[in-house]
Image (tube, rainbow, N blue to C red):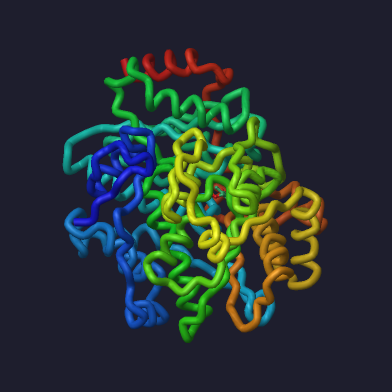
Length: 449
Ligand SMILES: *Cc1c(COP(=O)(O)O)cnc(C)c1O
């Protein structure tokens, strides 16, 4: 059975089930597999003819061996991935992968849908209950709320920064009720994340079985490697190495690409495109890491992250060690990192210009996160010619989630996908709180009395 160890190196290795239910390791590190299972070229070539859910099954079964029987996993993949994953042609060898066709119209659905099924299964096996506590900059909260809605044994508490999410993002979280509670915090995403982190470490809350669905959970990372295999199977017909441009905040999405690469997928470059929160591109350039406090507000609001939590994993994959505070105990192999990864910061002005340019040149609509991926790709291509490599730009949300930003640029407002329309009509229900940990602690205690 595959074991998972902590990036901080002070906790025992555990199996996927334990890593998944714990979320974070006891030493506050993040779980990573001790080794990455690998695909042969022939196995990957066969993906070309498989539907998405079948590729998901092939990839995930490498990690779930001995934990979830194959027939059950296959059924979970079929029901989780019952929506399309469009790959639109931008220009000859450049493609746009739209990860926005799930129930909440962002790529967060890919992980949330699978995590909810795994949680439901593990809890039922144990006859246990958990409270999933998640801090969100918008899309995680809605994806998690929808995926876990009415899953037996699970309560969900979502913390979100009131002023930093769009109305449609908010309504996708606040209209569900039942086992889903949302808390609007008068603060920033970092405040929400800090409150959640303190709750996980709080001895007074030890009797409350808390778990996380944030990008720190390994169960979130693995499903996010699947769409890179899928994209390559559709655009790299002879197995040519692919360039992926990924708009990045907490770096869970780009880590999915790195996991795919470690599993044998031919990847030429992973472009980690960030907004004004440029701690990582600076680190990659200089080897010096300085987190950004407070995080900077940008149009691509789901990426307003001053200290990306998955950097601990990224650094570990390249032989280094970074703890949860961002302190580097051992430098990773920077030359290897630079060989595989390119990173660049895209300003709001360039983000807007990217939406406009993409529409003018290609008649394809982007929202701000996708525009960051496009500009990041152009920065890379200016330094290294694309040649014959296929390139895939990752569009992480539906333009209708950012109607104001999009309308300002192209002059009209995108259609709201039918899966989102229902939520926008329902009455909202959420709690409101200052960014104060003691208040939040009392709130949790009162709800679990
Ligand atoms: C969460 C999110 C991102 C950033 O993904 P990370 O895994 O945190 O890097 C990008 N775009 C959208 C729309 C998101 O919701």
